[in-house]
Image (cartoon, rainbow, N blue to C red; front, side):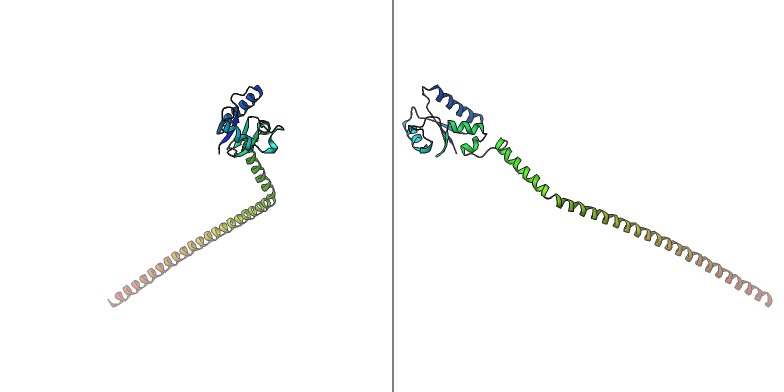
Length: 200
């Protein structure tokens, strides 16, 4: 899409020259691609411009004066409408071009999006409260689980103590059994000795 600016390079009117320079200078500042079409030296350009400016946009004498701005075949406007668009910061819309990233119009859209997002967040405020409650519930559940885990640990410790006590009891029992066995063997030895002595 090329912006066409119809100009009269050899115009004797200072006002027209000034308006043409204003349009061209502003398009260059915006880095908008445009083509200058001279109507003073090129009869074809003059005829095309006159034919394609809508009737309602033509002055009372029916002859539109430069500069006239088109986007390809689509009529954008004359200097006055361009100036209004420049003042309102809507030049891209006036030219029928998408605003580039970083432009005010583009940023305005982004801001609107952010505001909508914030409004959405506010609407979700109630949901947010519910989330907080859910988080609290999870936290309390988590605490409950920790207590259970601690109780289980306590149980494990108790079970371990019981096992240790049981082992000690078994050891004591074993020692007792060994002692009893030893005393029984001693008694048997004594009896044997006595028997031998008697035999002698």
